[in-house]
Length: 196
Image (cartoon, rainbow, N blue to C red):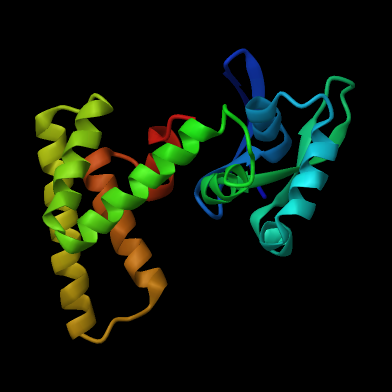
């Protein structure tokens, strides 16, 4: 993992976060999230018991978690298990805590919304507009963003008709379009637009 480590404060507790440049996503320290949601005195033991209770989680633990080096207060680097949001959400499903329950309910709501969007795809666009407004983007910016999505779809359809099927070629196209409407590459946009 290449990358900048940062610390976020949530409800007065530190959560270590790292940006993974290759995957273009944030990874969160699992122990910090578990401690935040359980207030366990011994987080390592809590995680160990949680994994033994949930054998399915335990079987994918190595896939969900990636060690990352963080500098501790003693100035030394220590390996810490980190996971992207989808991994963190899977771990939260195994935490029987009142503090985890609102996250579980939110995930259920998001799942239901996604199924509704699959039934009626227009809802996806309406939700995107609402989400961008909630993030403080102007209507002009939102319109430009929606146009760029439409343009990318038309261009990728044309490329496919012309025989281009390489993922790297599509990534290059996405970078050009993202830079056009946002002034940043796709990776820069993701990194700067995510609030952790």
